[in-house]
Length: 340
Image 1 (cartoon, rainbow, N blue to C red):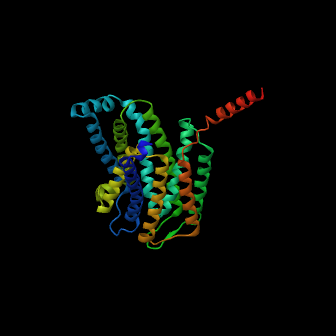
Image 2: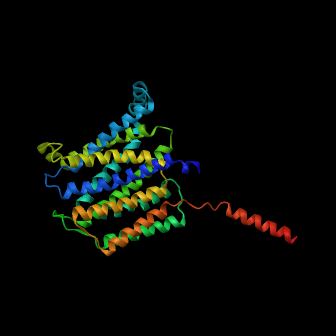
Image 3: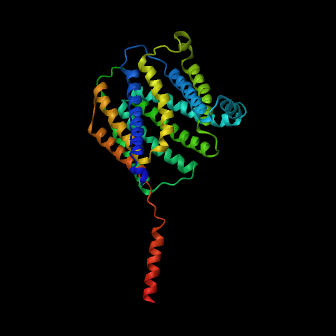
């Protein structure tokens, strides 16, 4: 109760909520802009994903330096957990590959779907994560959570039933490929998130050490992706071909946003995270109407509303019913004594 009444902690939680919301909404809108509206030469999305991994590695090294307190301890930690732990690197290469696929699919999806439609549909990561938690971590979901999962799926179905069109986007788009890209992305998000959580909880190794192990593998994986997908064109035109300040902003948001969310998420509860996701949907919709001429349909509005409500319901704390049977038993016992 004291923590709730503490204005500093409340303000900090509001700050966390605001940043998470702005990062999520701005990332999708700006990425969509760079793939559809921007008049400059199209950049290679695979290089953007690769640079994101490099920046995350540098930021994680900085955080580990702060955590260890000295360069000597930092060096010892890196030698122990990176150079002398090939098995751990291999273990973290699994989410690296999956996250690399997920991040590339985001570019494919936002090249073919509006930012608001993407933001709503991407919430399918919640049921995917829930299913992975049940299968991989032996977690259980309450009836309300299962209900909210079905409600969310219904909402996404309505949004995708007749996707809202953006009048200001002139490039050729394929909504089906956009939806398939999101489907792959949410599957990757659910599996990789739960797998990484399982690895974190299997030992006392620092979060930043685990991040470094994962991003090292990620750089190798994404570089391989650049070579296999755009290798010839990158050699011909250059690694940073088509980069503008807006593209750099996308890379910045992807880098800092992911790390920031992983840090601040422990200071907020599921209800606040739900509000954040719902607010990001609203902001993305407003931005899409303004920037891309999105025409909102009745099915989109109903679907988006269902998704927002389902996110809120999913994040509600489980009711503790462990004491109820005991109370009923005590009441029955007292009634028996009175009868006797």
